[in-house]
Image (cartoon, rainbow over all chains, first blue to last red; front, top):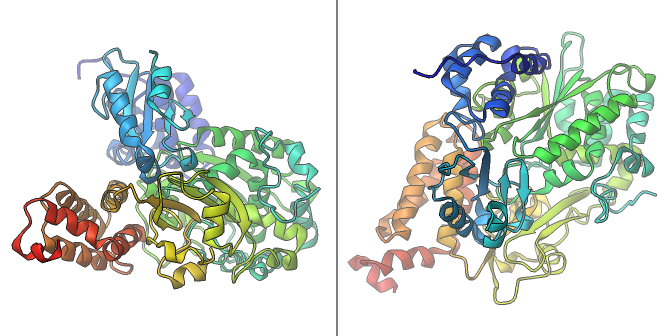
Length: 158
Length: 431
């Protein structure tokens, strides 16, 4: 690896340690720890993974097993804002394929890709639990209802 | 004033962003908690919930009071846990989010009473990671409850202490499975565990643990406050209480309504959801989320309760229906469902890990014109191979429910694809 080794910041360590205190076994904070790293760095690099594993007292391999299991942990760089568009059944019926097409066309990416300017990553996600307003998507942590081309254009700028 | 007909949603009003602590208290909020801890021994609370007939609202319908009564309360077990299953991820299901975001204190009161009933000292709310707004509202409500003495050491100066932690997950459908959820909460991959031992015997970190769904727990304060007889009077059919029923798809007013358990499906679809949109007609529906068997218009007069829906070959599941309209292809809809289940399989057991991708491949072959008539037999065989009892947990059997009913009800649609492109000789008589 050529980049300089990432070390967890004092703030990250403090927040992860606070999560560890909620559990009988500190390894239970693994998912929250990875999410804390992502809050500051957007994704979890190998160096961060090793550092978090050390803090939790588990092996990097064990933590990697966790990191790669969950949909919302990113082991590759992502854009400043991740757009998760729902492609489960109710949204599919109501037009999630068009949502995907519009997002990808506007940002010139394939599903899973990051826009060239590093602003957005577009990822499919399973049911977001807002099926009465399908199709829906999460823009960062904001849920957007009844998504149309217009809504997407409004978010991405015309 | 309490709304006695719609206890779960009485504080949720269109002009209100969400019910604050003051809103919640104004309709009797936290009085059930006071009554339970001050007046009723834990076993008595269990008995009330058992007598009320409250069944699990996460999809299985297991009686909540019975689950609680299995919790060992003797001194040999010093540590017990309660986990709130807020990992709502069944496609087409949007009921727990509504309760979490719009009336967070109701869930917290229900959680405290349930923890008291099973004598748990610690409870975790396991919330799916995508529910950001719900997480903020719950975290704030927990702080308010602590400040008011509803939560923490010696709740209401009585002899019960509890703390509740919010755990936000990172997204995997399998986390909704009780034992997979426990593994996830322990910070592991969410593979289900072998049962027995059941969680109530050996759950979180090997300690007795009860896992209850969000909506289930939201019922509890009302049962304690208003009594068993009142609660039993709410249901229209064999099951008790009210339920959040939802409809999504091409209806006029997709949405969610609190209605008596046992409300006829027709009333939900035609009155509350306003019927089909202009230009669309009802072809079929999944009554309770993605992992339930399709039902047909002829089933509209069935009541939404556990046994009535089971009798016609499906499940009430989460009570949130997905409508298949006449302009949506049932085969492609099944492909969408199976892609979901295939992706969300945890990979632990072979039938699910290999069977679901195989199912997806066959469906794609059929849709993309590479299908053969024998593929339908293979799909049919797969529904048997992944039936309950052949897999480690209920994920794959759930995935087979819409498939097996689609093969039965929409066989012509499958055959159309197969016949439409390069039909083998055997197909000719079918078209």
